[in-house]
Amino acid sequence: MTAITDKGTGTGKAAAPLVALTDVSKSYGNVRALRDVSLEVHAGEITCVLGDNGAGKSTLIKIIAGLHPHDSGGYAVAGEQVRHASPRDALDRGIATVYQDLAVVPLMPVWRNFFLGSEPTRGRGPLRRLDVAEMRGTTHAALLRMGIDLRDVDQQIGTLSGGERQCVAIARAVHFGARVLVLDEPTAALGVKQSGMVLKYVAAARDAGLGVVLITHNPHHAYLVGDRFILLKRGTMSGSHLKRDITLDELTREMAGGSELDELTHELSRTPAAGKAAAGDPPAEDLPAATDPEKRA
Ligand SMILES: Nc1ncnc2c1ncn2[C@@H]1O[C@H](COP(=O)(O)OP(=O)(O)O)[C@@H](O)[C@H]1O
Ligand SMILES: [Mg+2]
Image (cartoon, rainbow, N blue to C red; front, top):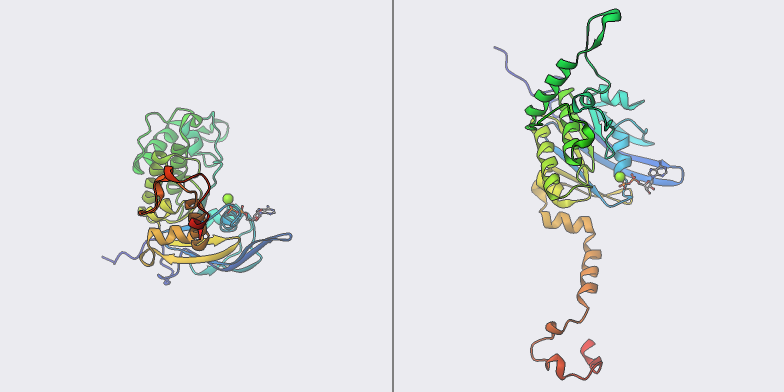
């Protein structure tokens, strides 16, 4: 029997990441959206991209997805430099992207959305028609494989919760053979419970051997599942860490901008509260109002 080699490689370059960006920059006219950003995506790992609004997260995703070309820097897929002409190009290389505003048709059944654009048919010529039974069965099975037991794949996808729709999109990418799954803030609009559900399926995609890029501005969500963390700040990379090198506290502080957070903490704690009078001070009610300027010294 031949030895089973590492999943998905076979190029001889076992160590080459599925996706590697090196010093990628991108401008929109005068706006420098990204400057010298680098990241790696490995099979069976989750790379998190963290940053505030306007940090350049979506721009980064659009470059990976083949929607926008980058201006400079390197983009390699499994060790080979590429230049995607369109999202179709990226998809053909196994890079599937789930955008925040999921492209679903709300009134169509779940199975129909699952197969949108890739419908199997049966029969030939004028007798060719959609193989509905096949699509229903496959959708149910594919969702179940990800641990999603949907009561009824005939229900309109618009009746699912935001979290469930994200999960269907993730299961879809896995089913159609994606090697890299890119998710743009899948938990941004969700409550705690639904966020947990989505993160569970993000982890399931990772366990299925995919390389995942998870965009988020929530360090708690990132730290729960992430293996690598890239921090973006106004288009530049302000940090790049492996999970073993950083704690959740450090990640949160760095994300919030450590010194800015300290300043804010200081400002907020200045509000004088009666109960906070230092021990030894006279009780607050004994002080005539506004006679304590020396207390500020
Ligand atoms: N199509 C565009 N045209 C011009 N400027 C853009 C475009 N897309 C994004 N930008 C600008 O690039 C910067 C990064 O935006 P974006 O990547 O959407 O950040 P994020 O997703 O982190 O909020 C912002 O200043 C934004 O205004
Ligand atoms: Mg965005």
